[in-house]
Image (tube, rainbow, N blue to C red; front, side, top):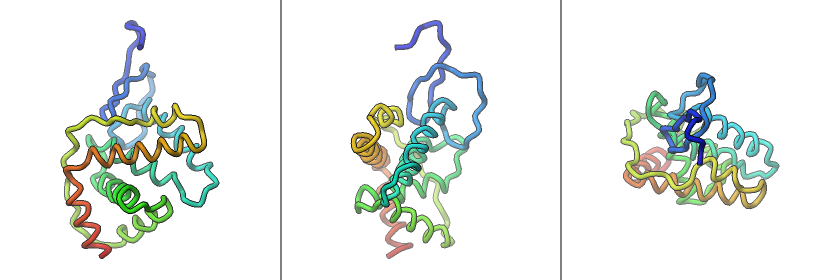
Length: 168
């Protein structure tokens, strides 16, 4: 619970509330600067990971899908959802998802604009950071991916169709 006298910043993407900092955003996500800073903290953790599965890609996709809208590039959302689809429904690791992104980036495709989820997210970047580094945090990243993918259920058929059409 925050002190009533403290100004707060509300993240429009995931709904987190932070003490307001007087800094201007330098990112293209639908996110409060304070939320984006927590994302940056998590990406520092995932980039230092020594595992071959490249869990960092899952964090990038979960955050991008969760913080879509309001000035964010449409293709960022679409790629994030495609990454979550392969990770959650097909068990791809981050390295495999990264390869899918590289294959799709080479193709010319008329990308649709997708409607945002109407459901609230149950897991945020803060939930992941609250877990201790290692297996618990990595498990929280997996829970986050599943939650974000689930919130986009109204677009699942579109994502499956695009993936099948582009990659067979």
